[in-house]
Length: 408
Picture 1 (cartoon, rainbow, N blue to C red):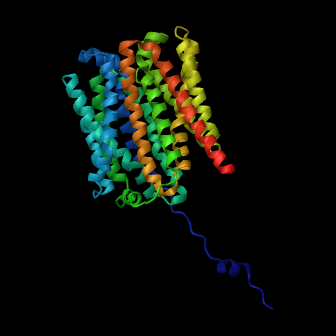
Picture 2 (picture 1 turned 45 degrees about the vertical axis):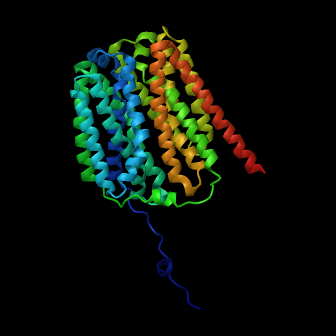
Picture 3 (picture 1 turned 90 degrees about the vertical axis):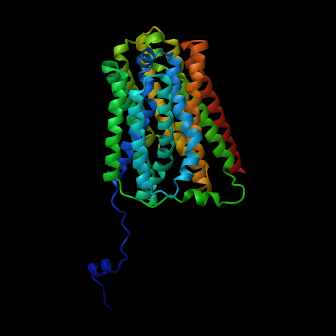
């Protein structure tokens, strides 16, 4: 009887496949594009007073620039993705970031409000294509087991836009004028396009739309997907009805000095980043619980913020906790969608989710503009609270329905 040596036994064992190195450089390039795109979308929110005075229009009209941007995304992204389906994804991403830079630069030069609106439409066209491509692009760069991590890195650029992009743009606009802030962002976008072209590895064209369109029969996950999409549209509408006009609210209602506004927006962004970290750690395995915690805390803190007008310390604490809770919502809502959608319709579900998200942004800022003009700033936080209750109720009903079905 012979015995094999440990080394020969190890040699006989089949080697386990190893995962390729995580493509940090490419994903950080995608995150940089996400950072610039979100900053470009939200830059008017911190500069409402300056832009309103400069262009001779109301703050409500400046707030509508966010609505114009978002509704352009909603109305154009599906058609543009279809028209560009044969364009290599690498070239398409670089091109849309260049268009974002050009539109922002033209915005800096716009002599009147009407032409500024036109530049926001151009930016919204590019923004919609960017967001339709960027998530799938991250998936092309990694194997399936690394997908969640890759998408998280990419989306982190959007969080960083609230932490740094919008506050820095606001500070620059307050110090040197909103046109220079737009111009600096435009230059950063063109530089970002160069970085993406240089550092992002090319991939094949996305075929998921064809695969999704080939699916036949009614998928049982359509109803929960629809509920998640409606809920995200509702909560985003509430958020942007209030947050779009957060600058005049903090200055006029809370009593924050105008020169400290950029610092507060930075604090809000940092709070959102803390919320993102909590999502990936404390609530990583308890996503549904985390979602309801985030919805409840955000509604409660906005209520406190509304009631703390004139009491600066309480308002600032509520503002920070609101930012933390809201930072948890987008990733947890996305997780809820992925749990709800069957693999067969996951791509289609994500497309509808993006549409609902941007519909909420545009509808919310438009609703806020109407209420601001007709009633005043004080009503906006209560609109947030009411719509947060509606979204929470929809999701709670869906969770109960799902548990009843699973118990049968």
